[in-house]
Length: 333
Ligand code: AMP
Ligand code: TRP
Image (cartoon, rainbow, N blue to C red; front, side):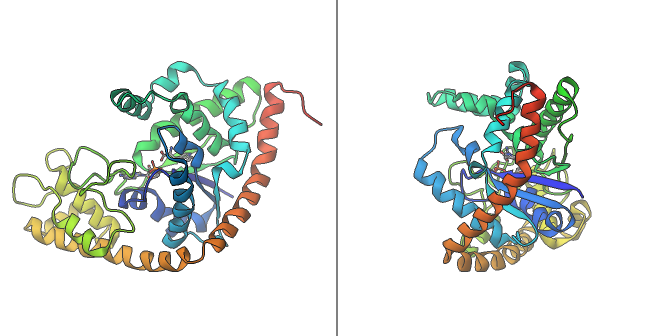
């Protein structure tokens, strides 16, 4: 059976970008067609300046939203990364396989370290080693597929390189995984800045739709989205990124399979925005309703997370033990 693993950081409230780029597929297909594991990767939230209470709150909050979005603990495994020691255990071995040069080449490291330097924050060492931990997340389960948005492709490529290198040097241990990005909306852009991805770690902004935004606010944000100069509606990501983004969102929210063809049915930006707002709201409404019910019962969410961690541990343990043995460490017993 295919194994799927994906993760999401508790660094902010989930956005429409997270949903369309990753979560909606976990819910609609991935969890039903494979042995699927989804993790709130809290250790990854410590790589940049963080507030401990906020990370704790967001970890449960993110899990609650994933359940509200439709992850079903009866068919998939949902857990918090730090509850399963195997991730950190394996991460160190992969740091011993990765090189300083390949970690420094990661686009996300370059961008985030530049930002941290600008603000005088200091760049945490864990920001550099982050991809080794992400590779551990994936390889500990002998994962075949990693459903992520486009921004994570480079990290999954590095994971593949590390798996192949480990297997060649120390014997066949890991499955070599591959990234799968959605066809549409693999990179949802900020509604106010079509050059930036809609990211949950950014400062609260008019261009970001949060899954728990009031529905009126959602409509306002979409109606005020920056569109491009020109009036006709065409799907051209280079010349008309704002309009292309709206068409992608509309398509991914059930407006039609092909965002390029969709453009032909609109002759004004106003109508496109109205339909996009309607489609997004129809996706968010039921999700928010389920969220309200789940948020009222945090003990149930904790129970799901405990059971998820137990199952994850039982899968990861033998794989990580095998890696420890292969790399030359003396077994404890
Ligand atoms: P993160 O918010 O970085 O923890 O990302 C969690 C998942 O959401 C990853 O699979 C990302 O690739 C995906 N994702 C985050 N932001 C976007 C976006 N703006 N468009 C598409 N996918 C995204
Ligand atoms: N790095 C991913 C992100 O920023 C989150 C993540 C951590 C992840 N470990 C993972 C995604 C393993 C997929 C598989 O979005």
